[in-house]
Image 1 (cartoon, rainbow, N blue to C red):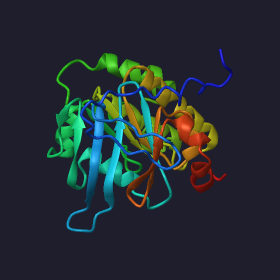
Image 2: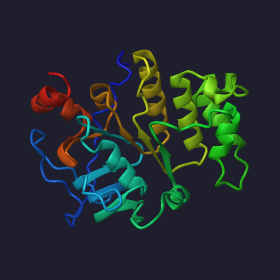
Image 3: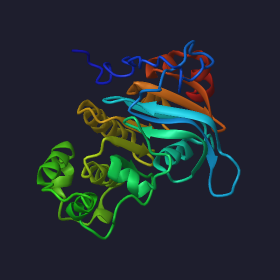
Length: 273
């Protein structure tokens, strides 16, 4: 077994058959090939849009992820990374393009309805109830369920042992990394079909970042697709099956995580050389 825990990530970008040519990105500079996405499990396809009556922030932007994969969206500040994530979740107007989940067009659904359909979304900030205990936060994540969710609670505690240890403690008293674990755990309590994370490692130490990425890999290995926005681009691409580099709301580069890490233009422009 390789000593590198991420050795088996970032190089398994499975080709998705697309006989009609719908939803395929053109070859991006540097990668040498497009990414076929028409039958991806979750896809924000050719999205153009913005907030309210404001100007377009996204311009023909496509992001997608398939079952068991980790797809990351990276790029400079102001590139539209979180906006693309919010567009997929229904938090802004998609004026052109579509969002599809498991073959169903969900472009017109509210964020609440998308949660019911199987989307789990963890925003970057304000993502826990600070006055509630850890366990109460997790229970809140099961609000849409009518079945017994105790098995899911056990699975979350197995994934994040520190949360079981601190389950009776107010979530607001936890460290930044532990709060993020609560936020991810609460999203998992909905039994999502896909998990979306907006900068899950923002503000945490490198050691905590590595731990969170390890847990994210474990979630993906259960078959849940993960679409993630990350400012720590190099580290995120190391665990990514797919990577999307956005610039000014448009796709600039796309490929496997391994491809993008090896691309000299991507390294020079976005990864510090």
